[in-house]
Length: 453
Image (cartoon, rainbow, N blue to C red; front, side, top):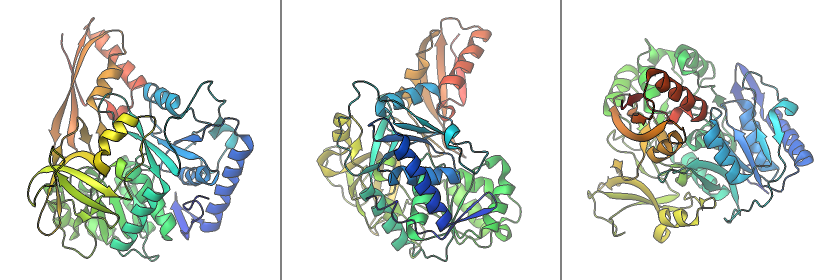
């Protein structure tokens, strides 16, 4: 029995000017879970969920767990190359591709059942795994992080306690559900914790509309990334437009001091920063409501884990010394699906080695000092240069590709590229960029394209 699907405690969900009651939510979960069980023909335990920020994604996620399956969450805008690799990795029994423009499910059009692939095997132990989220492509290949029910419950219980959250609060996470940060904070914590919450479709081109939506639902706790708070801070009279919000929380990428200060000057509210990664389900630290906010810090460890700063020789360092941030606790993931060697590398000596540098002060605050791993963090989205190079080199006209990170005041970093083509004419360059847009997920692509002619 799945504890998460058996604890639908939220009294209601706000979505697109409608309110869905707990009973309506539960009924839809049971209806879809039954549909899965009555129609699945493959023995595969995996169901791929194209995770729009939508009420149907919430229903589908819990229906997958209720049916005893494992949810594989993916970006709805994922492109062919990465999607084909994921499907080959998990051989899903079902693909759930919701129509985000309609609220009611159309099972016949939005649920696709697959026949099993001959010879498909699962090498990993998937006991208690409930969610797969793809990440860590340092070597050029994305890997499915296996998140267990114990992992998620550890995060949920830590945040509910540390933030003194009650049923009087109303949650909203302006983060994508296909990112584990968005899924856990925007859906799983409020559902389990018995908290009403708002699902926003994240149309950031309509900032006034989002603010109006937050105000209408009387949201009191808001989660998002730093760049969103920067955009909000440019809204005239923001403080009076969001009177109900008493906690602004961020993560995904280090909060720039200039955004923190600008937002505080506009609203009088301090953004509280936390830190985590997919492999930590996805939280490690936070600024609880009862401690002083230190904008240079990423907070203190959650109650479910211990944060240690380790040397290259895996020796714990003293206060103030910079080393690798390592995590021990119930939030640490089970490993990467079918990647035993890589799992052992990041879970060395019983600790999750995050690939991030940091330090700890005498008060217990943790500080992020930079990346050890080969990755570019663009506004909370992880771009892996080797994966992008590998995909681009599949195009027959490509000779060589180099990927660079460039600093960005708003997003932390952006992706820049230097590309050498066999035919480097303007027409060939345009054709290559069009091919990339059709085949590679847009959030991986460079902002700056430099062709070596």
